[in-house]
Amino acid sequence: MNNPFKDKTMPGELHSSPIIRRYENNPILTAKDVPYPATLVFNAGVTRYRGKYYIAPRIDCRRANKQPGEHDMLYEGTGLGVSDDGINFTMFPEIIRVHYHGKILPWVVDSRLTVLEDGLYLSFCFENQHSERPGIAKWRGEGVDFDAITVGVPQQRNMILCPEKTPDGLYMRLERPSNQWRDPFHIWYSKSPDLRYWGDSELLLGCEDVPWATAKIGGGAPFLKTDKGWLLIFHAVDEDPIHTAYPQGRKWIKRYTAGAALFSLEDPTELIAMTKKPLLVAEAPYETGDWENQWVEFTVFPCGAVLEDDNNTLRIYYGAGDYNTNLAFTTLEELWSVMTPCKRIAKEAVVSWILDEWVRE
Image (tube, rainbow, N blue to C red; front, side, top):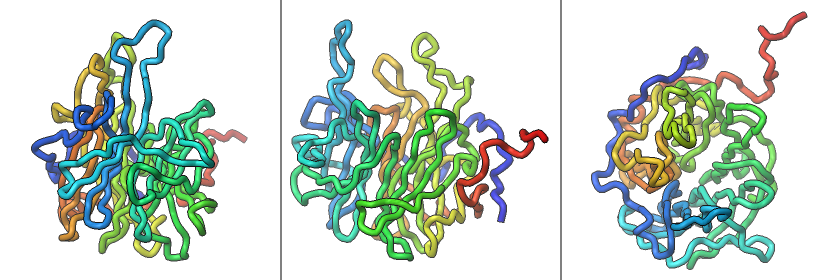
């Protein structure tokens, strides 16, 4: 089977799918809802664990009155909250602490939550003077303390621990290495026998496979197991000068959207279907904003997905504008109706970056 999306053009105008229903009282989490100083509360990992919903939003705190020579960011971190209904969260009084070799990791952000073998795990990246590094940590079971099991090398974001071992008996994680030399960025995977040592890395999904992505893609929520396959909610980015926002300041032309892909139950690295168009595009008033209030325009970013007990209702938790946290609903039945069978264009990441038509004898 060939990928029916391989001959793609610039995406043009995009809209959210009609199968998506936004929660009527969005946003569900903003800076006013956390018990510590915060400016932006967004990109929240969410999962269900032992009958409750847990949320881990990114927390940015900026200086209210920045002075010349001062950095505008006071700190970045990750919060932790718990809820009975997945909407009204009680936040722990402190931000998460990730312990690593006797130290607390700085600026842990963009976290995902995964339940694996009855443990609650945090996948994250953290900013430090030697660039951003990814990691995976396990919750101690109370409070905000997590213990790092593995920490990787730069530059990686969107590390996501998968909720089950693969059929070959290995743990699996998704990751998105950053290539500072050239776009685009893609979703990769690695495997491990013990959650500490990782290898067998290979391409999971290429940017070229997503019909509306031109710049990069990345994992969103952890895999969800369904009767048709492993479901991945991911983000996709296209760049087009027609979108230019804030023309008098930072020229922002990226558009972050959310889509879905399906992978085989027998081999979770095998792509079998994908949405033809995005599921979510920034359109609602709480998803778009202005530079003065520190919104990042054209941006929705999914980090959490929960399949309810009916095995049909799907909750998607997403950040909007790098500013707040929101919730949307759909059903698997509806989702299957907007997915197209497909395969990856490149079976493995071993194709020369110099295309055949560029090579001269």
